[in-house]
Image (cartoon, rainbow, N blue to C red; front, side):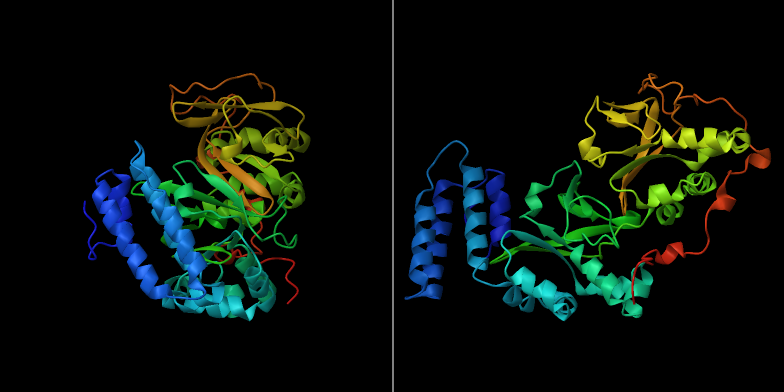
Length: 418
C-alpha cells in the first residue's frame, strides 16, 4: 500500500502492521511527515523537536521485522506530536469531552494533581456517557450533588502508569486506580478496574456491579500521559451484600446474613469469595436451612479467602493453592479453557467488590472433601454435599437479605458525610 494524503495515519499503520507496505511508500510517508513538520514548526523552539523526529525517522532500515518497527516508530512519532499539548489543551480540543472537562475542573485539587503527573492514564467518559447517568446506579449521587461520592467516581477513572490500548489482550488485566479512600474501597494499593481486548480489537473495561465501558477513542496523548475516551462511566464496586442481588446470588447473600458473616465479608480487606449460584443452594435448600448455624458458617468460610493478594483470575494460575477462612486449602485448576476450584466450575469470574472480588461457582465446595479435583469432561459435577431441596423447590435464605438499600442505585455509600 503506497501512502497518499488521502490515507489516514491509522489506516496506514493498520496496513503497515499487515506487512502490505513497501520500503518506498514508507520513505514517501516519512518525507511527507518531515515536510509537514518543518512547515508546522518552523524555526526557533521547534528545532530540537524536529531534530529528534528526524533522527528517529532516519534510523529506519529494511530489516525482516520492518512492518512492526515502522508501526512502532510511527506510533511514537504521533505520540510525540500530541505530547506538545498539556491536559487542558487536549481536553479543550475534544468537544465530545466537554462534560468530562467541566466535571474534572470542578475538582481543582484532582485536576491540579493531574497536571503535574507523568505517565498517567485517564479513562474519560464522553458526553453520551453523561447522558446515561440518570438511568444508572450513579444517578442519585450526581442528582444530589454528593461531592465526596462523585470525587471517588472521578478518582476511579485515573490509572497510574501508561496503559495504551494495544497493551490489552484477550486475558483480563486488573489495574489499580486513584480510588484509595477507605470510605469507598478496602483493596490494598487502590481499587481496580478490569481491562480486556475482545473480538474485533474492541477494548472493554469492567467495574462494579458488572458495568462495562467500551473504549471508543484510544491513546489521546498529552504531556503527562494518555486519555482513553469511553462510552460509559465506571462504577466503583460495592460491598458483597449490595452486589449479590445484581447477579441473582440472593441465597448466598441471605446465608451470609443468617450466619452473622455479613460484617466480615463486607469490610475485611482483600477478600476473594467463591459464591455458589442460587441453583446450588436450591438443590440443598432443606438440608442447608436445617444445619446448625456453626456448621453452615464453617461451610461458608470454606468459600472465603483472606490474603494479601486478591484472587482476580489473573492471579490464579493453574495449580494455585489458597488457604480459606476455615483453615483448609482450595486448589485452582485451569483445564479445557475453564477455571475450577476443587471440583466446582467457575461460571462467572471477576465480579469486583469494594474489598476484593468474587467468582460464581456451579456447586458448593465441601470442607470435608478438599482433595476432590475437577473433571473438565462434564459440564457440572454432582454435588459433593448430599441433601434435599425445600418444598416447591424454593431458594433458601433469601428472606434474610436486607431490603434497606436499593440495588438499582447501589452507589449509596454508607460513609458519605454529605
